[in-house]
Length: 245
Image (cartoon, rainbow, N blue to C red; front, side):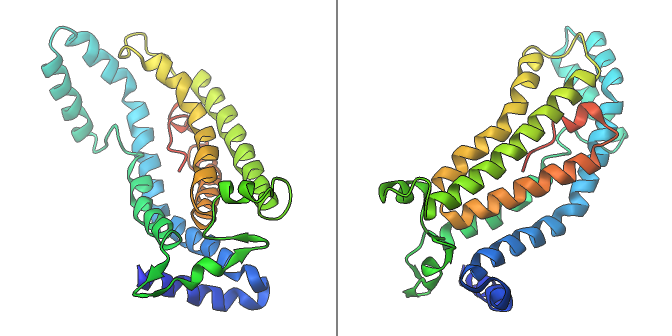
C-alpha cells in the first residue's frame, strides 16, 4: 500500500501547480484514468466477445430446444459452441474484475490512519473543502448539507445520477431493440428489466466510502459509460448487459 501512496503523492506533486490544494484529488482522477486506459484493450476484447455471443444467440436457442429435457447435455453443448467460436458468455466481466484491486487499495489507503508505521498524511488532503478520507456522513454530521464538504458530495451525486440516467435510457433502448428469445431461461426477462437499475446503486456506494474512493468510482463509472457507448454502438442487445464499472 505504501507504494501506491507514493504513486499518488508523486502524481499530486506534478499536478500541484495546476490544482493547488486539490492536487491529490486530481491525482486520484488521473490514476483512475490510467487504470481505465490499461484495461481498455481488455474492454475492446470483451466487446468483441459479447458481440460474438450475441451472434450465437439463435444457435444457443436452438440447443435449448434440442436438449430441453437434458440439462447436462445442454450445458455441455453450449460450452462446446462457445469454445468452438472462441468466446464466452462472461466475456464482459474481466475488465471490471481487474479494476477491483485498485479500488480496494485506494479504499484502504484512505481508511488507514497509519501507513508503514507513520501517520497517513494523505488523510489531511482535500477536494476543495472536503477531506479525502472522510465520508458523506461526516459532512452531514457537521451540518454541511449544501455547503462545504456537503456541496462537493452534491456535485458527485449529480454526476453519478446523470451517468446513471444515460445508462438506464440506453439500456432500455438496447434491450427493446435486441432479439427476444422465447425459450430463454426463466427469469431472464425480469433480469433484463432489473439490470438498467444497477447504475443507480453507485449513488449508495459513493455515499458510504471515503471521498477518495468515491472519486475513483465516479471517474471510472463516467469513463465506462462513454467507453460503452463507443464500443457497443453497433450491438444493441449486448450493450444493455455491459458492466457499468
